[in-house]
Image 1 (cartoon, rainbow, N blue to C red):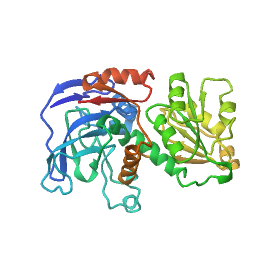
Image 2: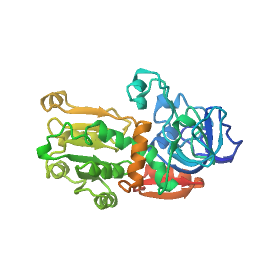
Image 3: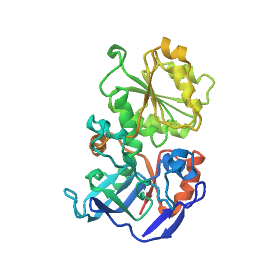
Image 4: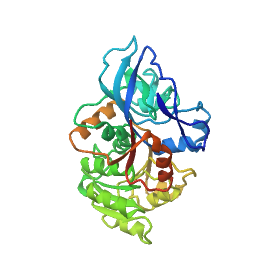
Length: 346
């Protein structure tokens, strides 16, 4: 099979022919049709996360937003058949037995295994997937549209629910729900749509006018350029946000988030800057700010998100490329040139 292989951190991926992966008894073999290119793939390729880099086995196959057709099933597999269209995301497997899994929080399972670390990822013609974590996909979603939902979409869906946007808590209903999304890229443009679906007024923040225009076309009430001198004032103009979600990987985005967040507001931590994020403890206490981390999402949330996408409530803006373009995609991601989500199609 053809695959993009990472032999060394910080070096370009190499497109090569290799032996086709063989599924284990509890796995299915999937012919990959589309795989989204997540910023986490770039972080892993560059060795930005030392703890992850220490667990990588080389050559590695990255890619964890995978959609394709089942071509083979293991001997222990039930409920998944050849020909099914399925997808898999960041979670290759969860144990189902730890405290987190039993409480419905399998996304932070103590024994979770990650796609492209525990098993080869989706930048290849075939991938093996745990049958238990192969999520079915139905019409009318195309593989290219569905793939980015398995990480980008799921991450912001879970984050918004984690902050209470869906349930209306901890908001004062009389004042409505205001959500600021800082960083309108692959995750951010989906966050805008989902926050709108949950009934929130959304302000989009980015340095790219093209991305801000995209956000407005997707329902953002206002769009603010983060490079503006009075950026904080502009964000607060319609009322201080109840939730600020940062999908950007810059520390400056978090500094801005703390400046604009309303009293008793919630900061949703999604983007991962290389630097540590700092906050003023006095402000945290006086304003009773909440800081909420968010790690991808659960299989049940993935099913819910796919239902929303199938109903046209959320749609990922994608640009498609052949697998051969993966290194150029990475380069463009580093330059901030991709408006939404790049997807490799096979």
